Length: 214
Ligand code: SF4
Image (tube, rainbow, N blue to C red; front, side):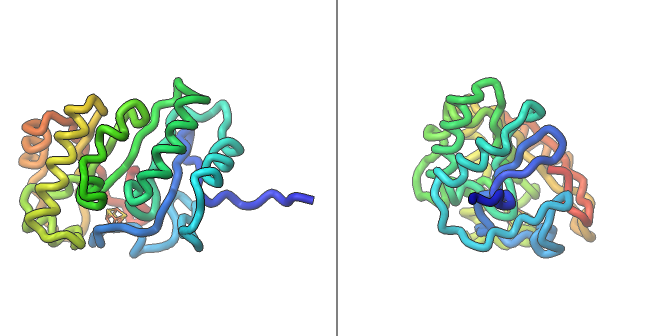
């Protein structure tokens, strides 16, 4: 007898299906929800084992899919683009079977730094939208807020390059900033100008103790 197992990768908030592929990240943000609990919107996002295949994720997406689904977002308790190969396979499955459902990635923008190559062309045709954390108006503040594993000059510039690359490849790209956390003075207007200069949209996310608006 097969038993229904609790979902590991796919969960819903409203009409959006979120897919959580990793708990690893190349940042250690001061405002990260990982440091304030195990869940977002009451959903436990801790993966006990990161050794899984794309087939396991696809199987779960298949089971979780319902008529209420309006958007699918790769986002979770870590940096989704660490699992680039799985994203490509799962997004390919979704595009083939549910071509009308837009697919987004919420990322820290380190994709090209992580993989040491330009991965953006590999996402074209699979990913419709990408939301990238700009976080700050200077590399110093970026580094202070996110504690990246990459050198600060490389990390912040890398994020901006990634945004530009995504936008130039036709992916709808939004730069995001978390506002309202602690006493950090983020110049929102300057961030908006940076986003505009990069040719991408801009969105401010309000920080909430139970997980910000994703
Ligand atoms: S990039 Fe996201 S997952 Fe990674 S530490 Fe920052 S807030 Fe957390």
